[in-house]
Length: 86
Image 1 (cartoon, rainbow, N blue to C red):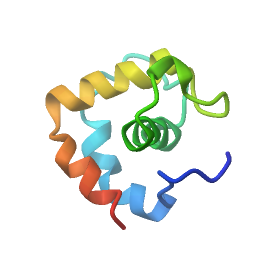
Image 2: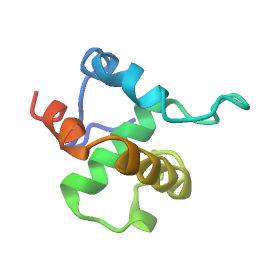
Image 3: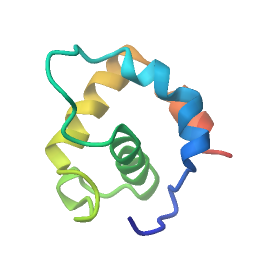
């Protein structure tokens, strides 16, 4: 994956992974790495691009958007953006 302005390290992501994992039913294995999905959400929030314009090296935009909807409803995005400051 390329280095984008919204980049966070895996170590930073591991601090909030447990909170993000709790918002999805575990009916089947994940198709995408949660770090890459979170990274893509941060990319959209930081650049302001449209969901459909997410670069191709991120997971499919529909999946990223669906995670964003779940997280934004159940978890304050302020927490997510706070971690992006590091």
